[in-house]
Image (cartoon, rainbow, N blue to C red; front, side, top):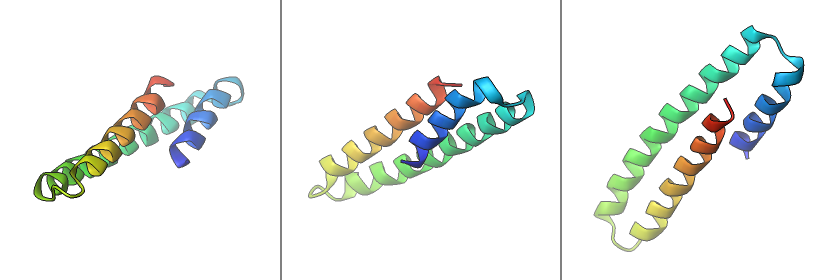
Length: 75
């Protein structure tokens, strides 16, 4: 949800926001990407050690990466 809000803000920002603000939003996007990659790394490690949740955890990691990809593709 928060990632979607950031994407929407970024889309609206092209019309009403200064270049400085757009760069700041871009930095936030990069920070979100790094945080998600850390989450995914830990999640995949947990999944590998726990067969009973492995598929669900891999699915969550895949969704997280897709959300960040969508976010970054708007920049």
